Amino acid sequence: MSFAPDIIERLARARADLRMGVPIVLTGEGTPLLVLAAETLTAERLADVRTVGAAPDLTLTARRAETLKARAYDGDIARVALPAEADLRWIKGIVSPEDDLKTPMKGPLATARTGDAALHRAAVKLVKSAQLLPAALTLELGEAGGFALEHGLTVIPSALAAPHLAATSPLHPVVHARLPMSAAEAGRLHIFRPEDGGAEHYAIEIGRPDREAPVLARLHSACFTGDVLGSLKCDCGPQLQAALGFMGAEGNGVLLYLNQEGRGIGLANKMRAYSLQDQGFDTVEANHRLGFEDDERDFRIGAKILQEMGFSSVRLLTNNPRKIAMMEKAGVAVTERVALKVGENAHNQAYLATKAQKSGHML
Ligand SMILES: Nc1nc2c(ncn2[C@@H]2O[C@H](COP(=O)(O)OP(=O)(O)OP(=O)(O)O)[C@@H](O)[C@H]2O)c(=O)[nH]1
Ligand SMILES: [Zn+2]
Image 1 (cartoon, protein in one colour):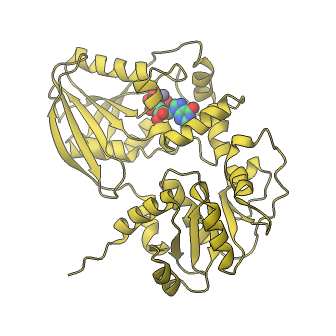
Image 2 (cartoon, rainbow, N blue to C red; image 1 turned 90 degrees about the vertical axis):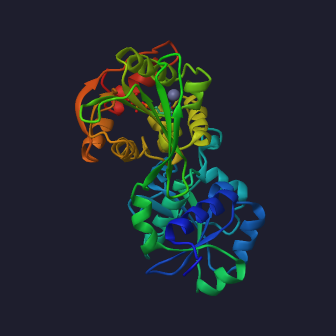
């Protein structure tokens, strides 16, 4: 019998630690690494890191490095040597693009080209999975166990963590209850909870769809600004209402409300992207300047929930070919694509055009 947390539980702890600014320790084949999320780093902790001995690096994604004109010798990441005089402001300026236009010359930045970067890569992945800016202050430790014990830090063995950072967590139904809605009186809301301590996702079942036939389905990603505030910058609110309306009119359907705000980067980062959009960058460029890929969502979650509910084929309401491909790959057949074009306005025309040009959306 053991009360000790397993690797999934330790990863959940590590994410919470990083979000609060607490360091964690990554172990693996190479030298153990002390990891702090750059976004939540404080001046006090930076000063503490400098007392440990080794010279810290600032590990960034290659996307962010490209914006900073820093060479990414490690492929998808870059290890920037932290100059001895660099203070907290300097670090925040490197990892966050808010001031890119005000202070465009941040370099030249020296990046490491030798040594093993596997743990640095794992560090960025972990920080990103905590929905923080994908950048970490990383410091090689002589020894991990005693240091972690002395400071009460969470230790993550990277080999054990890797499969869980790449996989979709299993999800389990928690509860469901009747929910009459204006779009459909015969509604039922199901709550699904992932095993990894991440956000819950919801399924809105309308009517009692036949599990043996393709169900009219929508994978909707949370958009606080569009869904709740009626933002005109995107088409999410009208798409949500139209999808529920179609299902109500047919009498059957399933709408998955996936808590993957901002295409998986979280609301804070989406607002950072919006601020970059106000400086003239489009939705894809803004994500890249922040260090993210165009779309960080894991659509396998949607397939898992549908399968858990007993569905194996869908008529999918979408204009996004990636959603169709990912559903098929995850084992849910898409027998038909049902177009969902609503909510175009003067504010979101460029956004929709960019999605068509750069993300392959069907117009
Ligand atoms: N990062 C980022 N996310 C955005 C932006 N505008 C909207 N979003 C998010 O994008 C997601 C909307 O995606 P969906 O409605 O599923 O749209 P889609 O991928 O275009 O696919 P379909 O609507 O099915 O065609 C939501 O999570 C929004 O919060 C933006 O400018 N930047
Ligand atoms: Zn939106």
